[in-house]
Length: 366
Image (tube, rainbow, N blue to C red; front, side):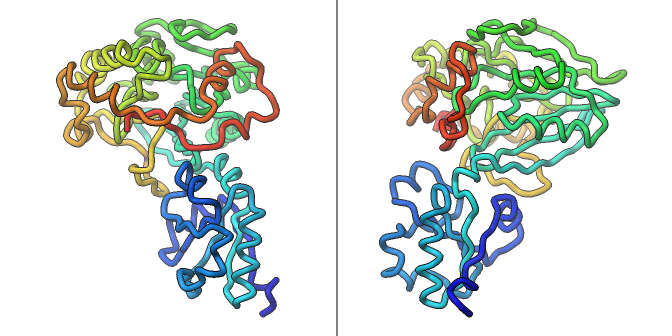
């Protein structure tokens, strides 16, 4: 085979499937070590481009190889080096930039409604379309709002309400854009500093999707991650916890520069609003980190009763919890201050939004 024939491409959507289905998949990220340490696809092997030719002994040529970089250019150079030595590989189209906007979905029935979870694989962002009858609500939409419209259309639903769980700091919310496109009602907590028109949430606000099916805002304020952090209950079957409770940790309290004060609030929110719920209640968070495995057809979610037994933060007393939460916050999300300003409506959205979002979410206490 020619060197050209040894080089192919793979889309990020295809990579999602390969991660699930191909045990022979071997990913090589040719970026520099600091780039990979900052943000990577779980399971990659880092061989910087400048060291690749001297490191051919580390390349399992008999396996399916996918070469990754920031945008694709360095990966192509890496694939060319491998091809010159008779090794076939595929370049990830668009690199990590494209990976940041790659989604898959999973759906299931809870409390008489259908929950569709959209997983933004490169960011670890989770958003939801919850529908019954002919109506649905969207929770925590990202910028690619056409994805939520497509989910609604595929189920024959009309989007009636759009909700954010809080003022996001790691990614740009698509809530306002989605509302403008579909004419839905935007519901937000007035305790976060939004500077545009919305319908303020109040405790106990109910959105009826169909007879006997209600999405209930059980707590307008579950402060801690932000002052306006809100969780939504789907009957007694599921809760959408935003950044208050994750599957691997809890939300970080420091992004508003009031870490100790917010940590106390977060402890109270967890113990007064979340933990009193039934063990069978499914927890659907707004993000997941590297410690959480993601599989096709399986929700990123766990029953609350399971989390009680695996998350040390949920059994600490308040003094211990606050000390732990304040001491264990790591690097903040990239560009988080500007992202907050855009999401709050105090700065306009610009064409470089997609670039600004690149990188992992860092919303949990590590």
